[in-house]
Image (tube, rainbow, N blue to C red; front, side, top):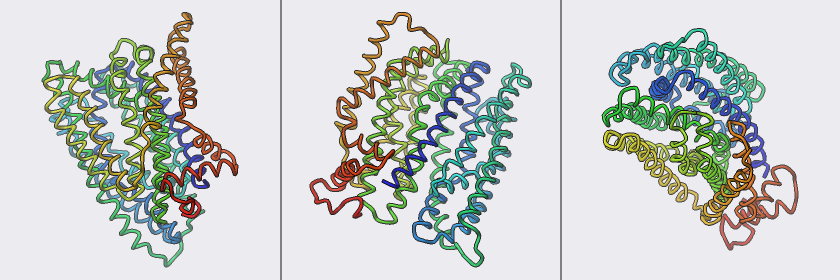
Length: 541
């Protein structure tokens, strides 16, 4: 429970920071979408896809490598080797960060002319390259803070970066961009670059101070073995990530081209693509900040359990994470389906966002569970298998986009999203079941939350129908969502999806209680090996 409390406290802080950034980010996305228009957002999304591939080369799996190796080095009692390991990680990240920047600058002309087929993105693509070495180094800092359970320091830099980005971008959009699409894109990229430079300097100071305090440099201590292990972990992840990111970039370049081949004009194709990528998906992924915060902290926790061969604890953690991921994501999906019309109209009036929200919201449980499952696979040393699954998923997406989008237009793209997400999640979950030998409780984890969210949505709609003056606009929509969420929490408790043991476990995160610990321990024993005597308990393990 000590480890669970530490993860919970860190995750609460990270979730609060992430939700703050997501909230401000969605507001910012709405503001620039209304300011720039759907066509500019479509071009920006295409540029971001190319930039994402360059960023993949720059980071090259170093965040995961540092997280795993620092955690395992400390767990084995070799904390004196951490400074040497981190020095090797910094050299690794600088090499790949500079390589990615050079490649992006040199290829920007060909990418804008032959791939995106719009010269207005050329300057912006070259500006993107400025921050790649800095973001590569930031991955080292982030991996270190995650491993030593001080992710709050990394979150401080992210919050500052988001605030600076919004300030710089809004200023440049107001006083520099005008109404030209090319200048709007330059303003967005330049504002982000300035923010990332300043936030990097802050993260660098926090990293140096923390490392000097907890891992002072000791002469004569070599970390050559840890450095080789870092490369062994990082390079396979890097190469597989290159393949996946390249396929994703190709997919996103093919989408507007396929839409044009289906009969849409260039502007209409970019607008439809921008409505999904720049408007609907940010709302779909907004609540995922909670899952992402917890998932990132699971990697060092599971890596530590793996080093200690704590199979009981591993199965308990996986069961708990899957249960609450499904509980949360099913609630989010049901409420978004119910209020998609009100939400889309309030945030993006005059667009097709509400329709896309209604179509994509049922995918939320699949997407969120896949995020958590990928993190747990990485924590258990299955990062290569996880990336192979992701590569296969990306290849399938490219094939489906190439076949379906020119024939069926935007409907073909939506079908592609569904098929690829299902494919990835099924394979990832199947692999984690094999590795951990965890037994899922489908009725409690899936059906009870599903019945609960249906009841909550109907109850919320019923109450609102009795209040004709409930109002409209963003604040009224927020109250509607809050009411539905309240009903959902009530129903999952009444139906038993959040039962006595789950409530006891939550209480132990806030206070120490012998009876609560006993309830949690008994369930952990049952998860580990149903029907076995309590000798295989968490404490014994």
